[in-house]
Length: 64
Image 1 (spheres, helix red, strand yellow):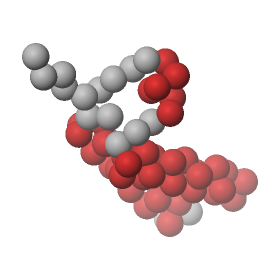
Image 2: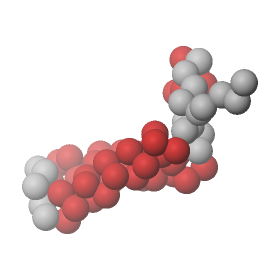
Image 3: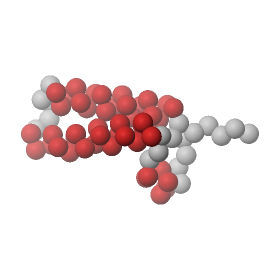
């Protein structure tokens, strides 16, 4: 996972957490939003996304 991808995931997680904190989502979605933000944060911290592996995607810059 490339650096821009990780930064985007962290930014999305922060925005979702702020929206959650501001109570912008229906109560039924709070747990789902929290799980999504946790996944985004975890995958960006470890620089690995299992879905990228499954689909064969790579967002790192290759050194030639």
